[in-house]
Image (tube, rainbow, N blue to C red; front, side, top):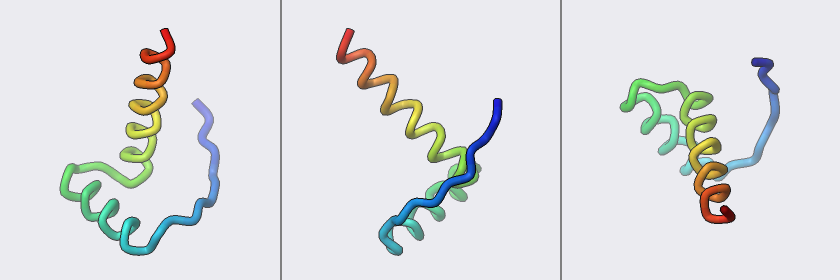
Length: 49
């Protein structure tokens, strides 16, 4: 699967908390963000079914 490189603007404190959370859970920020995006999209798909 191809990966896309992108930029987003995120509150500095939120970014720090996310980075710490990812590290504490043995994930990279990329892995965490991909997982969260997939989870959210799946939840929305299930609600629309």
